[in-house]
Amino acid sequence: MLPPPTAEPVDIGLPWSNRFAALGPDFSTALQPTPLPAPYWVGTSPASARLLGLGAEWLTSPEGAALFTGNTPIQGSQPLASVYSGHQFGVWAGQLGDGRAILLGETTTGLEVQLKGAGRTPYSRMGDGRAVLRSSIREFLCSEAMAALGIPTTRALCVTGSDAPVRRETIETAAVVTRLAPSFIRFGHFEHFSARGQHGPLRQLADHVIDHYYPDCRLADKPASHSYAALLRQVSQRTAELLARWQAVGFCHGVMNTDNMSILGLTIDYGPFQFLDGFDPGHICNHSDEQGRYAFNRQPQVAYWNLFCLGQALMPLIEDEDLALAALETFKTAFPAAFDARMRDKLGLLQPREDDRGLIEATLKLLAAERTDYTIFWRRLGHYVAGGPVEPVRDLFVDRRAFDDWLLFFSERNTVENRAQSADLMLKTNPKYVLRNHLGETAIAQARQKDFSGVQTLQRLLESPYAEHPGFDDFAGFPPDWAAHIAISCSS
Ligand code: AMP
Ligand code: MG
Image (tube, rainbow, N blue to C red; front, side, top):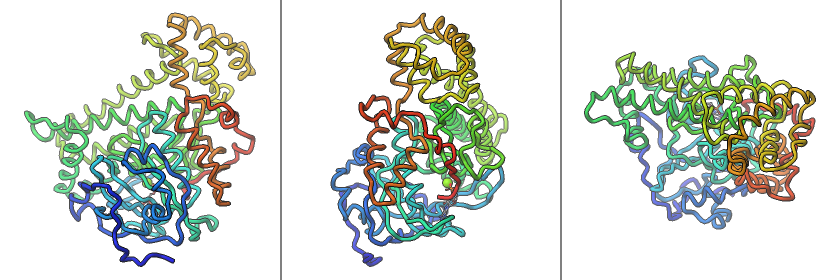
């Protein structure tokens, strides 16, 4: 039985501030989530529960499931769907918006709480406002895995499911992911108002973002245009750092449309993402991306392209083209610097040197030649530097000479370092466990049978990805042959 739509709001002890709602009706539409029948628990992240100050045990009660599926209103929340636009696959797509995500509001912890898959909104277009169990589990697990890897991301508090059917390529079932972030504002929010010539709301949005998330950008002694340019510069910087982390860990987002780019430089909107198995720089993880626009090695360029769209959207506020271009230039220096820093950590290089780029490039070239398993290589290399035998690393390569030549290069550079410290850095930087596609698929297959232990196991491993977790080596092994045939599209 569904609770009546007018169910009394329940006080769950969260203090709400709802600053996005306060921006007014140009930015969003107030509405209630659409209930789902008989919601059940799929997974909870204790770490995210702690961020909100909620007890994880209480959450998993039937009352908790009803609340975080959107069936019971939460006292103090002000549910809304926000409007944005964006470029999809390089083409202006016009108005999009939260078509299935409903922002419950912001709590005084500084985190907004959003239900993804909670029903139709005025921005649903042809969509049903729902998300399926499979993609919701992937988003839940990956959000928390990325956070544990130290990669900026929206978080996931929990996933609930329902047997309500949802039509995609086949009939699947519905689920809701509860996401947390300081803000879900995207590049596309700015593009929306700019494209419509709504410069008042554009400025209001930029001021909201500066005041709440980038206070350093407020330059009191300069004309306002300089504050907006400073915002573009800082977003470029954060985006560069995010991309450096994605590239270093081997994460492919898959749908880097401007509406999937966070103004805070967070990983957002997990769809057909993938952690690389073998190192294939041109890997395309999104089955719907026929041109390979979002191939792994194109991600930094695409990020810059997206920042350019943001810059264009901000032009009515920045006014001076040179100022905007100078802000965007930040990405071009910040990305390589951040990427080299991340790769130095992976290589255990404590002291940066001018010529480190050479070793970084040689390493990536070595891995690309045989599509060597990206995660396993780095982890084994860390164990070797920690004093282990070299064979587990060398055994990853058919071309032993190429490996030995590279090892000489690496050893000459690495021996300059304090070996124990170097190994320590490597084992804290190169994860043992990442959310490979096949691991997710196995947990999803179990979850479809209402066995959520696989989701729970993965969540536990991925929340400390650098720990050894004795007994779970299978989760850190090579992908099975069938993993190469997993096709993940935009359908979610
Ligand atoms: P995505 O590719 O998931 O980032 O979504 C792109 C746009 O389509 C966003 O505006 C989403 O809100 C919307 N969208 C995706 N799936 C659905 C759905 N099932 N129902 C309504 N809107 C959707
Ligand atoms: Mg999206």
